[in-house]
Amino acid sequence: MSNYSATFIDYNMGQLILPMDFSDMIPESHVARVVNDMVNQISDDFFFSYYKGGGRPSYHPKMMTKVILYAYTEKSYSCRGIAKALLENLPMMWLSGQQTPDFRTINRFRSERMKDMIEPLFTELINLLLEQKYITLENYFMDGTKIEANANKYTFV
Image 1 (cartoon, one colour):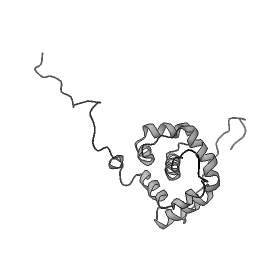
Image 2 (cartoon, one colour):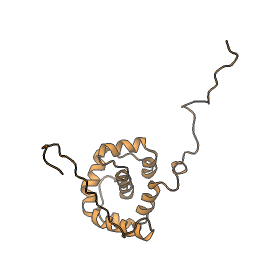
Image 3 (tube, one colour):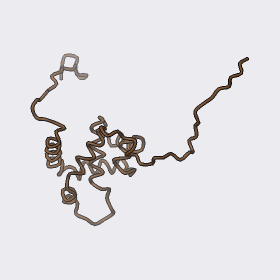
Image 4 (cartoon, rainbow, N blue to C red):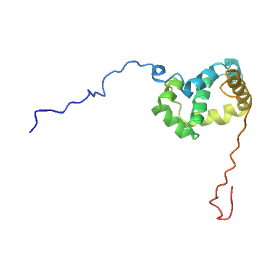
């Protein structure tokens, strides 16, 4: 029999944790910060021009755009997956300001609001990324991988 007793690091899930600001927990080089900075540089007037006003207050279009763009960088394309990430993913919580639009709202924004603004938004984001030297247009790469299709054993995509 040994005289040693087991020791553990204090574990209390009910303890209030500081800092409560999520930005302190996200590294400066994180892609969520790049998405945040790029979307914040776009004028509010650009987004507001796609809203006619009236009705129930909408989620801010900048917040929705940040959430969708960040989800795309993380290879999450489904509205349900994005809505789940808003509840579980720290950078998503930070980008959304802890607002949690449901999957229908995300889908409605993506299919109705972004339908008309996606092309000018994409152009504006590319220009901002070029100005800040996050990307260059020197090299283009295309994946030429052929993968066997499931429909027919003798077809390739």
